[in-house]
Structure formats: structure tokens, C-alpha cells
Length: 159
Ligand code: PNS
Image (cartoon, rainbow, N blue to C red; front, side):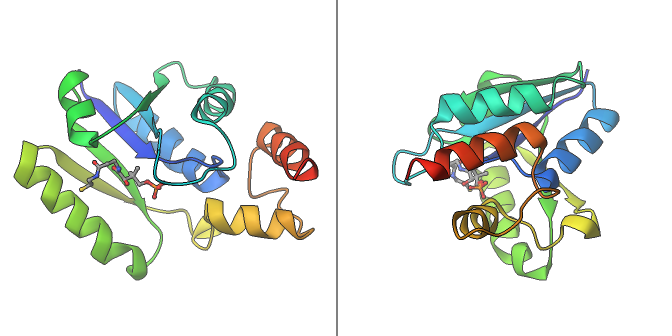
């Protein structure tokens, strides 16, 4: 039984995240999507909203579940008997920091990290850019799942 974790802020989940989650679900017995409750960062969506959106857009994968976490991802891995962290790598610019985190997590807790190459369709995509474009009237349909687009439009309209 191989259980892996896909961690992130997911503020909000994008099609790039979903691609990595879906491909991980095909390769492993169970995938936990772990949503960071980040107290030091201002987020557009609460952690409960981010979890709810993720549950909705991953419901077609029976072996994916969504949880939130605080603190260190390696502690979450230990508590949930997780074999490895799965991360998407979009470009060389992601590499340095991801490598550093992977080595720190292995050094501190023996937790492995596996990298998947992002689908080139989504190589430029990030939650921050989606929010910025959506905020100023950009068309982000096709970059986020439909239920997320709806929530994003609603939220930005109230700001
Ligand atoms: O979507 P993000 O914000 O790029 O995801 C980053 C995340 C949540 C995966 C990373 O910051 C993380 O694992 N944070 C939890 C705290 C932690 O374990 N920090 C040490 C990493 S070496």
C-alpha cells in the first residue's frame, strides 16, 4: 500500500495542480492532498474553502482524499504513514527551492520526495498569476476547474 501526499497552499487549486494529483492517483494506491493552513500568509480563500473546492474537483478519483495541515509537512507524513511527497516541477526556476525542501525533508525525517514534470500546457500556471489576472479582468477559464472559476469570480466581486 503506497500512500503519497501532494502538499500545497492551493489558493486556489489550478488545472496544473489537478493534473499532478490525477497522475499521482494513477501511480499510487492513495493520494492525500494536504492543504497548508498558512497563518503567516494572507490567502484569498480560507483553508476550509480550499479543502472544499479540492474535494469537489477530485471527487472522480476514489483514491484521493483531501486534508488540511499546520506546521511541517514531514510531521503530517509521519502522522499519516505517508511514503513520499509528490511535487510538480514546472520549470528550472522551480528546481532550486524544491531540491532544497526535498533534501531538508529527507535530512530531518527520511521522507522522500518525487518530482513529476508538469504538463507543458500548464507550465506557466500558478495560483498567484490566476488570481492576479482574474482580479484585473483576465480570462482564466481553462486554467482552473469550473467550480473554482465560479468561486473565484464571486470572491473577487466582493473585494
Ligand atoms: O503551494 P505552495 O505554497 O507552493 O506549497 C508549499 C508547501 C506548502 C508545499 C511548502 O511550503 C510546505 O511544505 N510547507 C509546510 C511547512 C514545511 O514543512 N516547511 C519546510 C519545508 S522543507
